[in-house]
Length: 264
Image (cartoon, rainbow, N blue to C red; front, top):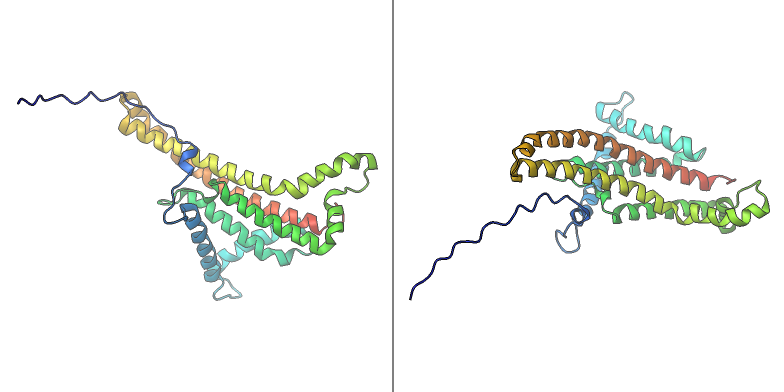
């Protein structure tokens, strides 16, 4: 019996570069239901706690470098966010707002940290949950201060407006101030983190494809430019990550200030 040797099939055409998309943000579980963003939330909480515990461990009249760093972060939130947006009762909310700002900032910066390289809030469920906590908090503050009827009046009944305008304006105010705020708050954070991380993936993975997998010498020569743009946009993304943490915190403070006000 003769065994006929057959030649292997010719390799198929190069499939080309597959650009990153939504599927790259659906990370598989690491163990059980725990995914990478969940572990990042836990890690961020540990980092924030350790940072403030370390910087405040030995308070001195003349602060050390670590104490100065912690006080500077606290001072930014206290003076430029809480005091300017909440009003006379701002001091009691400074610890929450400071923790919120630091927690969001650390989770955002995970997107450019080597070996992590995924901003937690680029996964939609994470900013929705955080915005839900903020929503519960400022609504509770408003209900405790004004009662249910008074809180509805402050939130949906603008003063000095003709009654016939209020017929249209009150439902809009209810949707905007009561129902849609957590949606817009979370979408702003999610959209920026998602888009920024996707942009970095395009440049880094595109540069790798051009250098290692492309059959074009021209593309291989241009690959350093793609990597260079990836580095440039990494610095830009770091700036966006800080700004988004600041915006989320300042909007939270403004919502708290709005429900504490006597007039809409």
